[in-house]
Length: 354
Image 1 (spheres, rainbow, N blue to C red):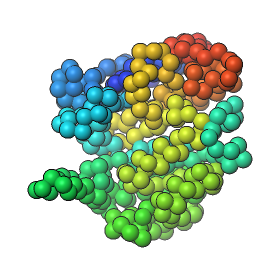
Image 2: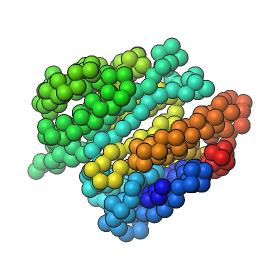
Image 3: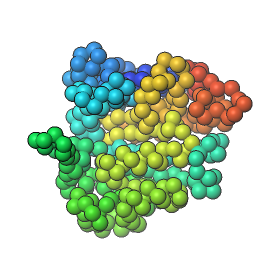
């Protein structure tokens, strides 16, 4: 199969972890006789530095022409520390989501047997955790009207949703639930927010189309608590943009490291696959970043963008083998054991694909 992949390394550790995923993808392609065509493009702070725009038109054209996008990370401290910056790397991420129609962020959370004691939560609370948070990505408060009032001392951000936006995300959630344990949780704040009441009534109206799925409705603050207490009680959760942003980061540390969790963003055009960690600029260039989340995102890409499940399963198996054998970076190394460099982990994974 011919695989046309847009490669957006981005900022910070993005280029380093992307390089390791490329090694693994290329090794898989050789083994299964696929042809991979990589096309690199700029985004984030790197794009601002080069052309003054965090998601240039040239980058968008590359993404639209690709079958999938493999993405690193966006962000740089000089923008984080300057609240008055008019152009920011994160604007490129929002623009990319909007222009590619990336309406659904798929964030799996699961545990690795060899790392279960790395989690900040007790073993007995997290064993068996295997959940997916489906976050709406192109609506809500991040895309609503915002501004300052005349005196400059009052700011506002507006959360707006349409029924169609809720329906398309919920449809994906119901379909995922049907292929898993047939449990779906709609996360909202319907006791306070009108937009949440629209979410709840829309999902309730869709229940009859999926009679086998058991649907629950929970307030976001309760879910935030239960993710710490009993994460294994959840399977598929659907929620709006802001709530999903917060809950997915909370859930990500259940496994023991944010450097382990992959994600995808399902789009109307080209879907995107990325690790959930940020650009981690403090580690950039030090060859210490954990590449496993990016490699596992490539596994999601093989399965979801190309329908190549065997290739995806092989990548996951090799990642699990690296964890079992301790071929890992310093963030998850067992005390007293050797910590491997980012490039060493990538080389080992690629070599073990064969």
